[in-house]
Length: 419
Image (cartoon, rainbow, N blue to C red; front, side):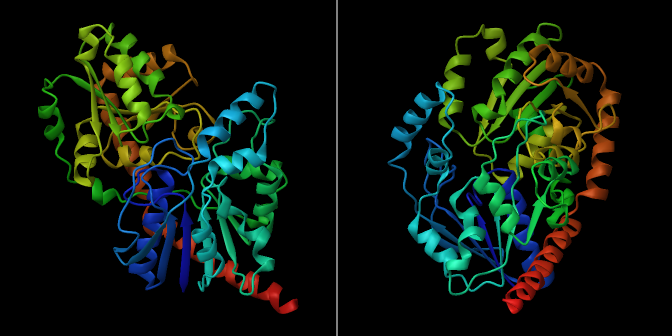
């Protein structure tokens, strides 16, 4: 089978969608001898980001997957973001402007997708220009079946969503929609997406790849004592991840337990630099207990997870949270936000704890609970490890993706034969 995956970012960029499609792509090649291409942009950061860091080369083979990176327009971002901010003050939400901001505006990428000779196209995440393919393919000489992976970050409110009519139409026009959780499926059905086209795949991680980390590598690097309790975050360093909530909760918790240490890791960004500057005004006793680790390599990432005593993701919007699986693969307890998707991933009190959204005091209390109880940390970490190994293996998730692709091709061909 010839597969085209279209994603906004791909390796070496870091993020949930990047990790998911990298894993699926490589395993389709290795396990099933499929031919897989990935189309993406040529930046470490998203097409809608103020940051840009070019990735080269434009074409390469990564573990058997043919990756093509396309340039995209950015000059319009600042003026359109400014206009969008102004009209938002009047309660106006422009889907057109949002789409221009998200992009990627790239004629070369669009042309490549439209001319693809793949048997199946699967793309993610929602909100980007290429996700409208199902609505435009009838104009093409050689249209392809399409599997939509939205990775929606639903808010908890059943009545609140930010999904445009065009996006919902594109999902309905697709052969299938792949979702991460039962919660995501239920929300989409409420919005009118036919249940029969929704497939719950979950996400995955390679547990074995995290097995041989060196717990002492980063603890020595940070000059930690044996009884210091290291709290960690790893992921995109951006405001949407509520990292400042974590920092403020840590400061509050440290005043109750001075053995606490915090490490924040990810690709260096404008937001990270701004936050670093802000934290430089803190009392020295806090500054000396907060560390940054930027642009880690794969083996360093594994070592960092092993160095932790707990992992925290305080984000208000997640479609799943692959980082929870990574932390569990290293037998670490996790703390996440008590929102829809994450509540369906973390089992409260068994493999992690749930904090109230945007609540510094709630997160502080969760950190202190785990900090004072090493046995509880170990128990939760082992439970999370067993859950990950049993339910979120790459073999199982890749099979779900690939079976959906096969069914999508059959469904598409049957419809076109009738036409």
